[in-house]
Image (cartoon, rainbow, N blue to C red; front, side, top):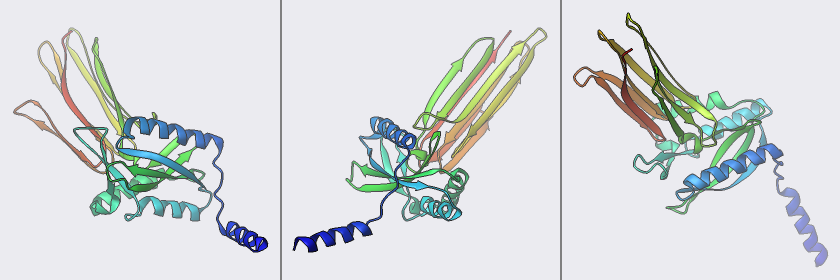
Length: 268
């Protein structure tokens, strides 16, 4: 009887697929992100555990992972509360419009690369108690993409006032790497009065925009600006309002958003 039992155990073990072992650096990256995430969002959506699935080392593996990352019935992102930025609600990709799904697919296609590592993450929605799963990409420099964490950004704003009026918004991934930047600046000099300005907006896996207008009076340079960013998916509208003499900014997204407007004045 003992021999029969042993044979059964061996047969079952032989049929169980053995998962590959994550390289040390990859494991450290993922575990670090897990700690960062749970400290900030764990009370809403808990990063419970992760499993290493191997490397993208062939075109077949690439296509298989791309399919996993864009499967409307399996992929979920999060809706970030506009009133409480630490409150997250899971949203199935299947509920998005066709246009939004296409944007999502384009984002993922631009990120997935050969030799990246693939990790499956298990999440727990604290409100419902439901377990959810996502597929994440990691490379030798750290995290690259995950549908949940890709919906969330960390914003840092810097405003400087001196002879050069300038400001910027640094858009970061939850794990700390820079994801984008919006910046604006106003220079003035004279006499005679000279005015110039610069503005720029860029963001990976999302959208960032800035609009600016420069006015010159007899004595001063005046710069009006309006900016916004969003995680996938959504839209940004920045329009000049001649009545209020400022920009009207509208931004929407399932994930994180940010926006602002203002005026810089320089009178040398």
